Image 1 (cartoon, rainbow, N blue to C red):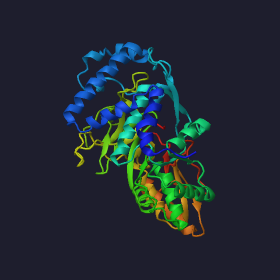
Image 2: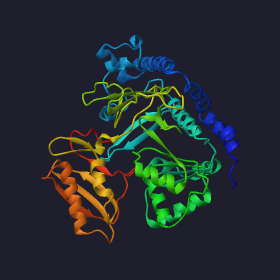
Image 3: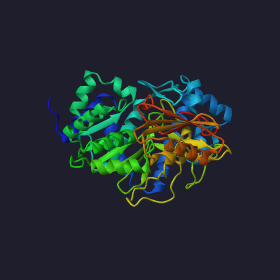
Image 4: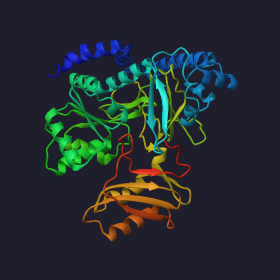
Length: 455
């Protein structure tokens, strides 16, 4: 079946699909394209009004929050602005697991069950209503249009979530074909699979790539090693999300595919939080989310200070996410973006709190400190570092012929220099390093208490 023209998909077929689903995506996207140019003060007024509506709905219709507000003596009508959120406790993954059903609104209809798998393998089960789906899809749609890419433009998606892959039945395949989207599963990255991925990208000549930065960068490096040129396919942008984007990944993707790289931050649980514009600003979707940065004690930090990202999703009245701890670390920027949008800026997302490691003396440092030890050493095709305890750090290495005992000694010495001279560094030679259950890849994982809650 021949794919439909992009304009027909964007202006007719996709809006029809959303209307049939009961989603307000098109109207929300149009609204977002207006509000993005509002001054910050006006955006804060909109945010406060929507936040008040969310808290009122939670107080009236959500058993968990009805009890919590009563215990705290909190009245939603007394809320003036987002700063008043500090009067409420943080919502953790453990809270959601313990109160999964009590977090449902008693007037919600059509909730869809979702789950995310943490690094421990324990899933987080929650529900999403049509309002939130509409707003999240609209926010992503607005961001792609910043780069001149619209719904219906040819797209290659490199993804690994079991939810997406299980949906690849005949109906979903038909939809993807009509909407000019093709999914490349990020679970298996063997040489043969990578050859096939490169071939499919060459044939599709997509206008955009979307997916995990580690997976897209891996395809890029494989293509380059094979001498396959992909920078003449007409790819405009690679949208990367769901993992930290490292600068070497950005450079490799941009060089091999001949395109810009747009970083995005969000998740299935927390929603679409921020996306990079062509001027380089990571714009928070302030119309839909309130972002707070908190320290280890839960105290709100001023812009410019790094801490854990806490999100309140304003379109989540059916299943409220209020002051939800993401486990990720970043800061709010103090500057405005050169693009002129009034949306606030998220500073560098430094990664999950479990991407940080703890030295024997208690010093907390980003996993990059260990990544740099291995990244430029010879003989290493791939690696993963797991801090099992303060005393033991295990390094999985996929070696090639240049991997020698001198390289092993360099790894051990480098890690001990950062974590402590008495740390037991164990090197495991492996044939390959599988991704997480979601298809994502993590270079560093710490199980040491103090680096944050595992996701």
